[in-house]
Amino acid sequence: MTDSADSPAEAGAEGEGRRKRHWLRWTALGAAVVVLAAAGTGWWLYRKLDSNITTDTTAAAELLKYEKERPSPAVKAARNILLIGSDTRAGAGNQQYGRDKGTQHSDTTILLHLSARGAGATAVSIPRDLMVRIPSCTKTDKTRSPAMFAQFNLAYDFGGTACTIRTLEKLTGIRIDHHMVIDFQGFKKMVDAVDGVEICLKEPIDDAGAHVKLPAGRQTLRGEQALGFVRARKSLGNGSDTERMDRQQQFLGALVNKVQSDGVLLNPTRLYPVLDAATKSLTTDSGLDSMRDLYDLARSMRAIPTEKVQFLTVPRRPYAYNPNRDELVQPAADDLFARLRADRPVPIRPGGTGKPETDGPNASVTPSFPGRNAAEGACR
Image (cartoon, rainbow, N blue to C red; front, side, top):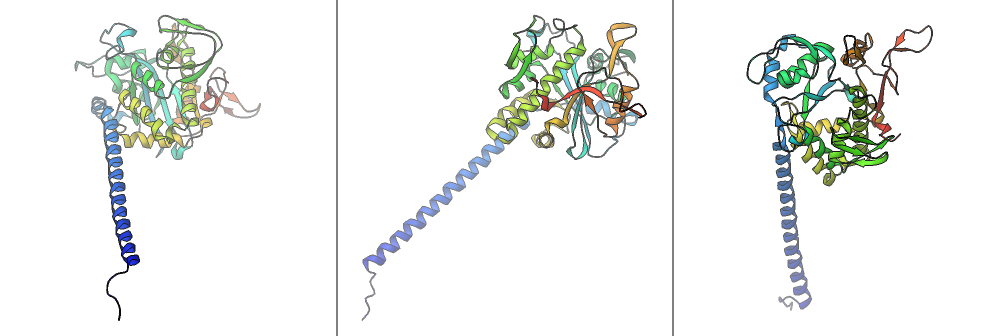
């Protein structure tokens, strides 16, 4: 006769099974809570970064009025982004650089061309004192500025980003797809977010106007020092804006090199402070005002080798009627603009005059332009 009662061994096994299933259920529940919490935190951070960005709708509305006169995109998938460093004294932390007179100029203007299929990136500095034809623009008080021949950075004061874009498009024939504006405070926060950028100085810098005093040699610049370095002009070299643009390109190349080599873009704990600083600092058009848009831009930049990220200044020389202003060197400038419009390579060389060079005595003119690439860093 078989005993229907479980043996002690069987009862123990059944109890152990119940405890194991109980533990697995709690483990699964705990894992689900962790995943949901992480997802919730991730969504909160995403929304926070998204809300940091200021969208410039005024420029888009103004540019729409002149759509018929704007250049058409020449190459599909290539992008042209206008980067503007504003010298406004308005806003928290900017008053220390001067009294807010209610005006603002484009202290730094860079045309960033991203080639199709991630083939390369070319950043072209536009001199603030370049003499150009500025169209009639709508001012902040809704009146209109007269069309005039004047220095380039006045366009931003006359009609903000839209006026600057229209001026540059008329000068170059290049369609500007997007724009970003950053002020003094924003620049400092960006540099601090990557824990500074290393540069090498052949000579010390002491420039009271730019709020910077630096010794010669290798050093890491953070917020205030970095801003002073890229703004310093009158106390260095011949005091020209051309030399200042060269230092800005040197610094930006070192910044790109650091971000790429230090794995910032691949490390979430290091990337978040950079994104937080960047998004708080930026005013963009509606095509770049979300984290998704900026992530896509960062991903496309990440795929470009640093030796393919290059910096140069539009070919320029002292203006014939005022040596304190600039004018374009032709036909070198038009050749550069044509290459960017057609998404063709822009050959650069260290130093030089910005004039076309030839490959041989019987060769056709093959322009190359003085510049640098991000792989060089700032200490080579």
